[in-house]
Length: 391
Image (cartoon, rainbow, N blue to C red; front, side, top):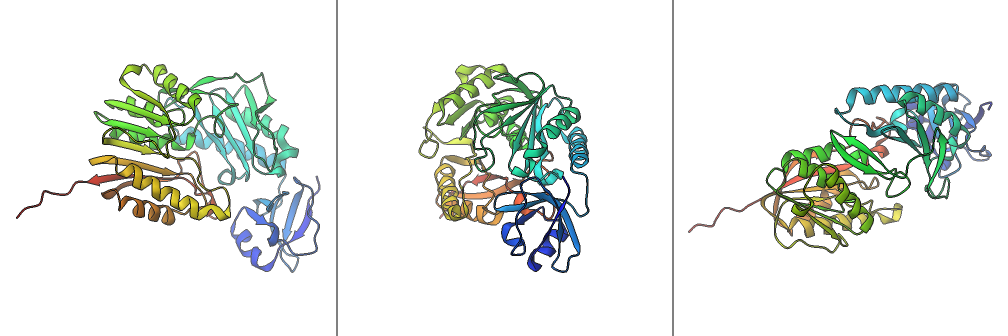
């Protein structure tokens, strides 16, 4: 497709020129027709000078910016996926074949996510701009990652409005497969569950929990398929309790522990609403990793309150000297606001000290000029015990 030209508003020129990957609809000068999604665009300032190059989109984000200079989109996809694969070869731990291969803006392909699970790659498209390039994306992903099968996971309502998966490249995907994460084994169901099959962004935090779990009583609430639980058991936890509202997720958590050779009778599996459940006794190490609590601009206050209430609830169940591992994947809530919610909640639960904070792992790179890409927040908090009173 031949590039078209669109003019930006004066207020938008600066951020795009510095490298921000999005142009919102209000960032386009008035009176211009928006081209069909996927149309290559030259972005110009009000005086007609070139600012950047991108692809037209059809949602609130009107343009996904790819480069400061005009480029061939097909060549860009091939180069970006190849560079993304090379980066993962440097940063992944040994014995790991499940990871984020393409992380949208951070890998130069805004609105496009690709996760790898052994010989399978799962594409998820968050911008309609990529629809005309799906076949090219699949071919380049297969070549860069050296996978047999590439599928697309549907379910981005604004973009595809569908459910399940579609085959893009190679033989049909299996209903389930087993992948490795730092030597541990996990069952993945690409067409079911959250996101693309496994919460890959928590891999390093799961390894951190494993290092703290020896001889501890561990609880994993909002466990999904038990990623933290498996790592805790591998780290030598005395007992792990897995809590999730979905029976299928609990079944997979049980299977994941079995796959790694752990005695299921030593551990507990609970189907319950994690917003209301409570343990029978104080816990040495409690992991609280809830789903995204904000689904719109007006939901921020509700999300803040949710994290505050969870901190108050589960912080109270951590014994003095124990650790609360808390996480958030709510992008709309900043680090500062999230920590404020934790502080407000933990005041009711005891005295806590931050031990560790972490964000996205290295296979989830975040563009410097795209702070919106910083969504993951993880913290370890030590519950301190008060000294005995004297006098």
